[in-house]
Length: 235
Ligand SMILES: [Cu+2]
Image (cartoon, rainbow, N blue to C red; front, top):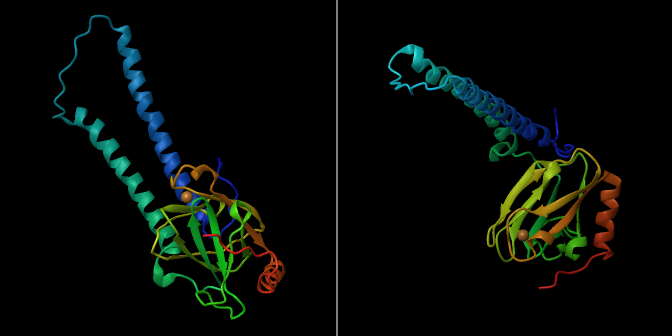
């Protein structure tokens, strides 16, 4: 059974996999543990006047009820660790960070997300960078099938850049730029929210990610460079 939203990034399905693994392991243990508890309660309810036993757990007949579940839980933990380490390596390890095709700077600000694209020189962090700050109408436009590096920071307080369908959540910190990457695999318009309580209007801090085809992305960049549909940030 799967219930998470459709995966829009190259790693979202792997991250969902870890989530499902943990969810089902914990879910099964939840049912087994409570089942055993209720079984014990309801069967002993029938025995009237029974005296409570003092159990030391010294012999195997008793201590196996501790050791066997302990070993099983430990093996489940190992399974989760191995799977998580694989996904972590794919997503995070800096040396393995794939070569990117594009760069975008993303700033969290009370209470909107702002996106800065390279200007005509094609390089980010230069004077001709172009910032989109359309309030909560602003869209982070990304090309499908290409790797974009996201340079994430905050202008005022801690925020958290959260795109559920990308399997992507990263706290953003004033004064620091954190670099992450994303490779969208599907075109569409998905929600970008702030996942860190950042002030009274935190709940309204929502923008959009628009994953488009390469042609659409090219014309978006062209329009951006020609000054169309660009609103400068209001400080
Ligand atoms: Cu926020």
